[in-house]
Length: 136
Image 1 (cartoon, rainbow, N blue to C red):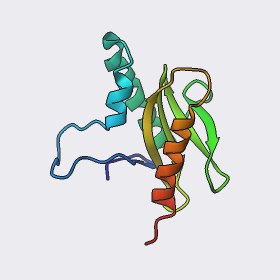
Image 2 (image 1 turned 135 degrees about the vertical axis):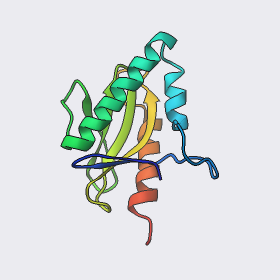
Image 3 (image 1 turned 45 degrees about the horizontal axis):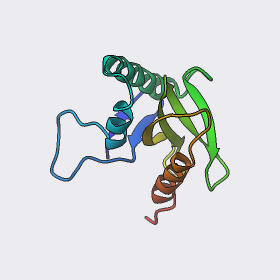
Image 4 (image 1 turned 135 degrees about the horizontal axis):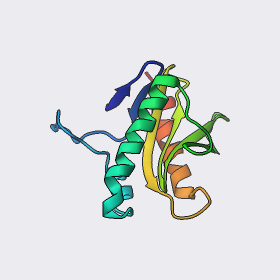
């Protein structure tokens, strides 16, 4: 599983590399899809700011709200999931109960409207169930 280690948190991605593609640059498919909706000239800047916010979250355990961070919908355990924000780009995720010190990024999305899209909530919950409720 892809992850980024900081001082306070490990950030893991629910999306995984295809089998056999080790090392080198890899971008989650949902991030590629979300970036396609952003003007080509702004993509590199969005990626740089997203990387900076990921690093800040991993190192400090928090982000400035509401500029960089929103509390979004509820998870089946009653806790919330969150959105790391860069313009209209969102990285949806949650703090793991099963793996302390881990923040999971479910997926990335381009936010088209004001409200959280139901498909994004459904996808976060599906990934949450796969990771937090898995028997091991």
